[in-house]
Image (cartoon, rainbow over all chains, first blue to last red; front, side, top):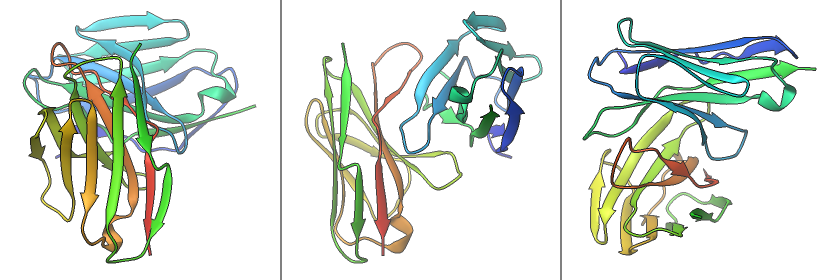
Length: 110
Length: 113
């Protein structure tokens, strides 16, 4: 079993839809949870970073962490064609390397 | 502010040829530096990381090597490329504290023919 699992997609939604992207992880020691966005042929860029269980909101983006279920989500409200990208979850345990999911490719159609 | 530069952006190399990818970071001191490879449609594979000049840790034994000749310079090399070395190579940096948030370069796309 991989340490971090993520559905590769692609996920295709119409413009304006609410998008839900998810990851599951196996190591309960993981402490920090991040979401990166990667446009085609570009390096990933950090979108959201959270430490604790619960929700963290930044504009149209909400990151949700459920440590009891080892499940993290990224919600995108009012999705735009410019949100079309691959979204990578990344999880970190102090003293170790960042562990990435395989990424979910999102396509938002106008 | 900190910036990370990575070059070349794209290269096509024959099997058996050498490789050198360069990465530099500006606006910070003593960063942690990383080389990742991303195969098509797959996640990020950590290849090397460095916590200081001359200090390199290899995560995956393979045909590649890394060097850190200066504090903010990280180089990925190969003496003889294999077809399987094709991929998207990403350099990244982080500070030596906190949650190890990585900042990535724009990437180098390598095609070995």
